[in-house]
Length: 372
Ligand code: FES
Ligand code: CO
Image 1 (cartoon, rainbow, N blue to C red):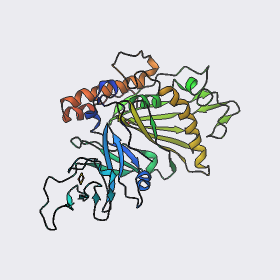
Image 2: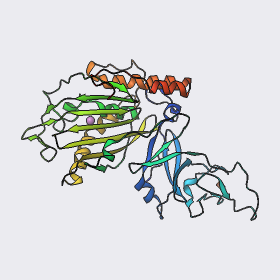
Image 3: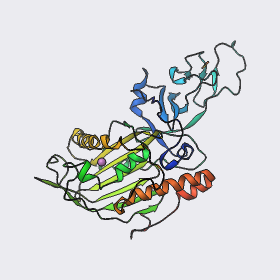
Image 4: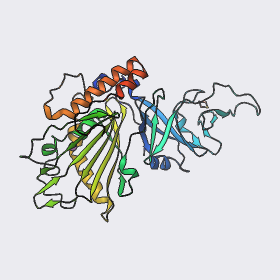
């Protein structure tokens, strides 16, 4: 699969006028482990991906998966056109070879034993494999962590990775679509909801630990088509059970449903910013281990995503604009708080990493469960 996406917006502007520089401090998945394995014969890459408007190369070199600026220091061509060899990553143009620290180890046009220029090294980025995804952080000047995904480490849960999807909207538009319940009765009519069940309570939202968290109560959704999915069902309605939303700033979300005392489901999603108006979502659907087929769970997600996509790609503008450009109502609360925090993070980042750290660590608890 070709992950080398042409950026549609080269102005470096993201949601609410924020800058790529702010989001470079955070970890984002750039490929699945399988995508790296399948990119080239031998399974070591290299593979090109796009993150925050930058071409990023990924390869396994000498047993280590590394991420690097996809630009050969010799003449600036894409290194991902080259080969991952036993000796290192070799450029297709003049065959320079680089080890997994980025250092050039071979310049074939020089005689054996010649001293190699010290500046002949690749610009590398922080890179880690977690949840079978390859995570990259472009700027290491701030201590940020790979987002939490509780289902992954929970032995009672079975986690299924979905096919990542590229959408023509910003990461922010994707995030808001995910955290918004008031679109269920309309965009997901018959799937997750339907009129007349259109009124939703405004829940307390906690801001702590770099996360926004809230809980939603059971609500009735007329849903004749969902008999195959999750108890409890009824011939013409299904209850969407109590859920817990966890947004890990800026672009990760975990949604946890408690269907019964013994059955839970969980969805994890990270909306990686390709550029300001394009995102690629990496996601999992998890459920308490049972004998259901993976297909059942993937099909439900496919159906829901198929209902969201045609709507979400029509946002005008494709990224969230200035704070007062759109009209919000009280049940839009999670999205309002998320927008406010995104803006605060970007403003703080312009003043430096310490300010960004402080903006990230701010706390505001509305629920009774302080410190959730
Ligand atoms: Fe890569 Fe010359 S451009 S070796
Ligand atoms: Co939706």
